[in-house]
Image 1 (cartoon, one colour):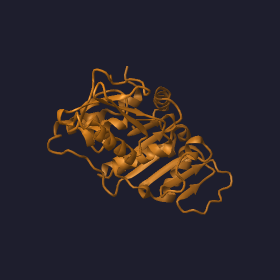
Image 2: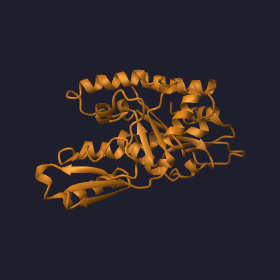
Image 3: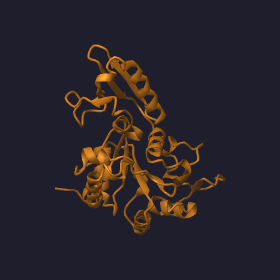
Length: 288
């Protein structure tokens, strides 16, 4: 049976398929300078209440005005636990991206990415799509490398390497391609070990540990949304918020602060919790 959370994706999946049908007319779906990135700590959201309804209504209105609000939930939980959490909460609107295990895995829906890659590969599935590394490889190296689908099955554990075959003209120049791939993944904020299997003439990529800061940085690069247009919400002393770049330019909303004393205009502190704190911060920063 399809979950309530998955059901909320009906319109998104339909849009995915429509975009897939016109991929030759429009290769990229870039976001504009008026778009915003909202990252919310899943555990800090709390139960659905009027303030949360207001928040999701603001997100929906922003999207309908042809401006994009790319909504991310971040959690220390595994994908399975986070999906159960959201399903039980019955949030009124689906999110675009789920970052689990404190930044190690990024799952996202196909229709909101800047390239139709995910929509092509996963439209109609009932879960998020993993591996932002695959998007980078498809976007920047499809002319040089192709994934080895026989050795690498979709849904394989994150410990297993992603394997790519060089196209004919790049077989002998694989070490140079390895350097290009490694540099691009580093540029995009993805920590990976890229090696060449000289005997098999294959390129192997093994994503290694990441942080929430790394994950948010990747999403900013992927969506082309700046730090100034990014807002991050969570409990002040949680592990996730401790891992966020507080020296950057993103706007922060910190809940559960008994005595707010912050003077940095980028950081809003409040004694409120849950969606009440989130809405207070949104009104303070006027980001939605």
